[in-house]
Length: 92
Image (tube, rainbow, N blue to C red; front, side):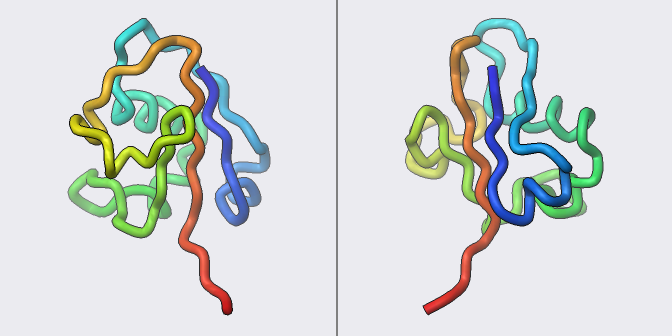
């Protein structure tokens, strides 16, 4: 499984991808937590003090916004899944 990082998340992590070896049917939440163990500098940018994903962080699972999936962060993943994590974007 791979997590692609974009913009400031890429700069903070010092890499554009995080590779994970999680068991089949691990959840999006588990994948994000595993990524944060690998790159702890991302934790304050992804999660609040309660351990919940910041509303301004956008996570896509195989191109689908996790916020629109019925199970949200509890969505089970295949080992071939690709997560894309985007920081907030501003501009005009």
